[in-house]
Amino acid sequence: MLSDEMRLKLMRLLEANPMMSQRDVAREFGISLGKVNYCVQALMQKGWIKASHFSNSRNKFAYRYLLTPRGIEEKALLTVRFLRIKMREYETLRAEIEQLRRESGHRALR
Image (cartoon, rainbow, N blue to C red; front, side, top):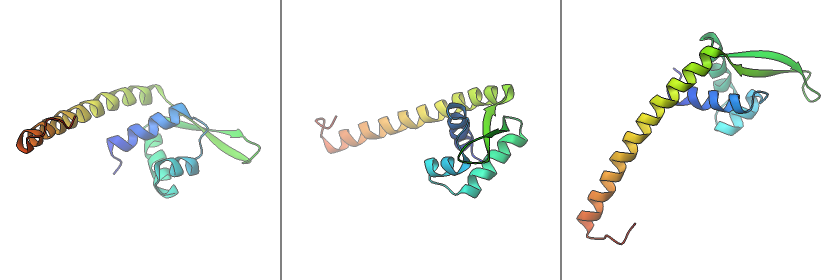
């Protein structure tokens, strides 16, 4: 299953670099080419991205990935959801750090 975080990362990357190859995406994320292909196919099946062929001197046929209007909406929703999760994590971590400072008696660590 494709996580919301992976969907968002991939959509952001492809929006910024529509002509990026799946191999380049795999290198960027540190994951297998097969996993990237699975993720791209999942986004295409949902109608969030579309791929179109274009000629390229390096590669006879390459793809350009574009977010669809539905993809742009979904990316916005995922961004808000991801931001809320990260803000909760940040607040929890900040409270934990403060508790550890109080317990250790070290206020100088800032």
